[in-house]
Amino acid sequence: MQPTVRLVRGDSLSYVELTMAYADGSPVDLSRADVAVTVRFRSPGSDAVLFTRPTTKVDGGVNGVVRLSLPSEAEGATAGVFDAEAEIDFDGQTQTIYEKFTVSVRERFL
Image 1 (cartoon, helix red, strand yellow):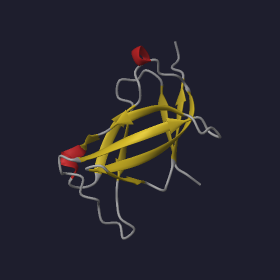
Image 2: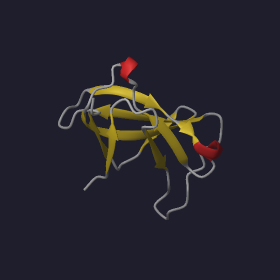
Image 3: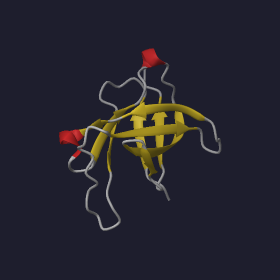
Image 4: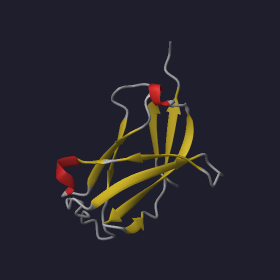
């Protein structure tokens, strides 16, 4: 079962932190300037990518941790359930993380 992240649409602190690690648990060093991590989102059961989000490296990426924010309301954020996958770009060579995760976004009370 893939993990689920639960957020509320429009919160200013709605972000996701991901840790990139090898099978033995040691962190992937993401600190080089030519290494970037992006996350793609789609509706469950669909092949079409709805949006892609860049990440920022936490503490320079040396411990394999990145953070991303979902689109803001001004960017057209919507509530719903999304499948997500992360991809690491090592200076033009890509590695897609096998494990997907789910993001569930609900509407905020008005």
